Image (cartoon, rainbow, N blue to C red; front, side, top):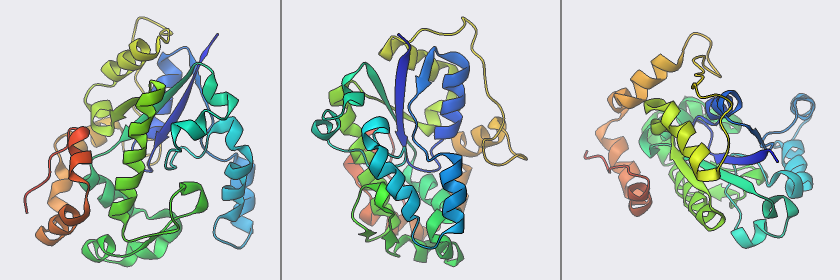
Length: 250
């Protein structure tokens, strides 16, 4: 029977890129983690705080186990649903919190008005979540969003889950695919690795651009001393260390 992968990862962590690599290289299908296109189109025509998308995931949770960007439920909660009691492969993706926060500031999604704030102010501004985030509705700051979401991914080890980092995908995507294949016993589609080099979001950028930006940590140039101090004051440092990230010095 073909393996099924359920992926979790915050926005801007390379979930779309990882989906393409899985599709091209592994004999597996991915459990849905986004709303259908028709729901997205309808939501744009309706007023409200993305309520239709939230409603979709509330009513379909037993089939898809939630939004791919959500805070993961407790394993005991997941196990209530038949979808989690099959040979489901749980995969989560984590990104360096400093670079992730810069990405979120550049594109704050349903809180587009926050894009107009300077980065240091953005870091101390309350973040209003949507229901499908599966957290409290208002967080003290977007820094807490990183803490909560990524801490939830560690729960998945109880279900043989595998966590990878955005940086590892850019560093050696073939090694990541091999890791998934071995960890979950998923057959490869071919002995030869098939790469995906296009950007899933910006046509004028490709994989080489992102590899250069993230692996050489060029994003550090955008961090002021004040921004680093603000992040360091609220970030979960033990959690960072569990993913192999170092706390930056201001």
